[in-house]
Image 1 (cartoon, rainbow, N blue to C red):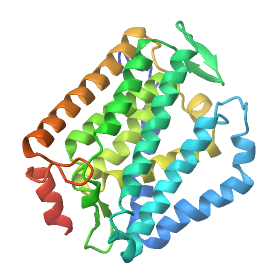
Image 2: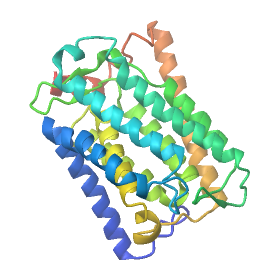
Image 3: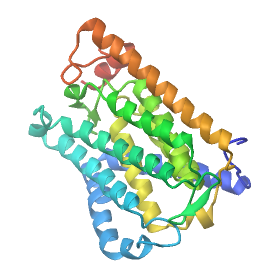
Length: 311
């Protein structure tokens, strides 16, 4: 994979493919039925919290899963899954506009957590790379660029008042204003975040994890990007908290530790998010929209296709 990663052998490629397919399959299980979601995102996490994670994700453990960020990210992702299920399966909730701000809030919170982490990694001053909290980190301007990109990505969140539950039996949480523009900007930002802050784990928690929710968004269930994202993120981080040695010992895919790669990845993230913000606000200004109340992309084919398939 050239400038970004050193993939050791074909076996590792096969493992990477299996991880991608497993995440997509469990995501489908979680959205197919109410009980599938309850088991995966409520019953299993409670059992792991009580019986497993205090050991496998203990503070200071050798795999870096015991940091504040891992614990906060785990429960914020799970909170998103549970909250989205409540919207999907309790009809009265989906009709209340104030409830619909929850998906936007939990998304913004998750992005903010990661942006803070990027700034924190810059503050370490590890300009030549170092193991901090048992994770390899290299500090540099890329952290600042991508932290700013994360803030821009929060600004891009729009159209939450248009969230609704799909008419089919899966009852997905549909957010039609989250068209490909946002998904692209988010994916680039989040990949850069993982590359910067969880560098040698980023092929899994970055590239593959993002593919596992982006592919369903365009080819399985359009309009349900945030639901796909929350569920695949929760699934992956629960696995990592349970089997912390996976990315370091069982199937490692280290980055090249190339400063140019860090810079290019974060620069691309920053530029795309900046362009997206400028474009979005040009629409808001031209149409005289209220970004807190109005949907922005209602005239696009992507938006109209989601409405046609789900409402």
